[in-house]
Image (cartoon, rainbow, N blue to C red; front, side):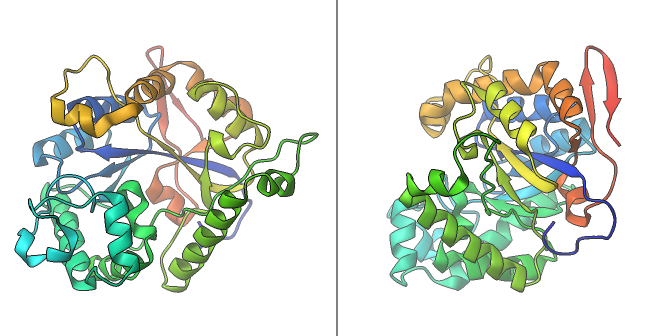
Amino acid sequence: MRAGRTAGPVTRRLIVSADDYGLGAAVDRGVLRAAQAGSVTSVGVMGNLAAPAAVRALAAAAPRASLGVHLNLTTGRPLTPPDEVPTLVGAGGTFLPLATLAVRALTGRVRRRDVVRELGAQVAAVRAAGVPVDHLDSHEHVHLIPGVLAAVVEVAKRTGILALRSHRPCVLAPGGGPSRLAWYLRRPRRLAAHAAKRLFVARLGRAGLALPDGMVGGSLVVGGAGDGPEAEWDAVCAHLPPGTWELVVHPADPDVPTSAEEEARLGALTARRAAELAALLAPGFAARLRRHGIALVPFAAGAAARGPAIEIREAGRDRRRA
């Protein structure tokens, strides 16, 4: 983590975080299966959407996984009565789309107290299920919106949940290929976006929040990472630098019937979510980590840069990485 790092030899540690628990039955089942297998070590729970019984079932099925609140201001209805958070909702009392929320926030039309009230209610709802909560992240990265960021810091301090997702991107450049500089020069929009994210991360660190070293993913591998989740993650693991990094995944079980509302929420990502679940459950997932000498850790262990690795269950056996 970038704050609260302990002394000692630096190892390569990976937090595998599944977002969107509560978004729908297919997502909930996919996340639960991956967490139960040990491939997912951290889960973001949507406080305004996840049923308390489903949250408890997740905690019971994967007791060593970290649970965080996936702060949400763009999907579904707020837990707070809409007339008490008017700057966050539309005429029907549902959350605004991300683009509308961002414009409102950037033009000073989102009240900080509305954000604090609603996000605080979401944290309280997850805790009310009787499960420990050790970190915060957000749906559609809303905590990075300038008009929202300060409110998220306030919620973190009020609730005592002082670990937060870091959106500091880690661009991985395999030896012998194009450099990071060349990669960025061909992607000026990413250069600007990544610079902004690093500024946000610095602000969060100054606020006293503990953050992983950054985020990794197939799209951040210079020269490309192959086709599909398994190829992407293999490239990430092959070039992961020392430190504690977060890989964010969005698994869903395609065999679970979904409602029309859930289908709309999944959108074009349905096939990708199914592919990610298959990759997380494949025996090769554990082998990939072992091959590259990477310790799989929950968010809570990463927060202190210490602690045991997670067990990965494959072929009926439990495997543990120290």
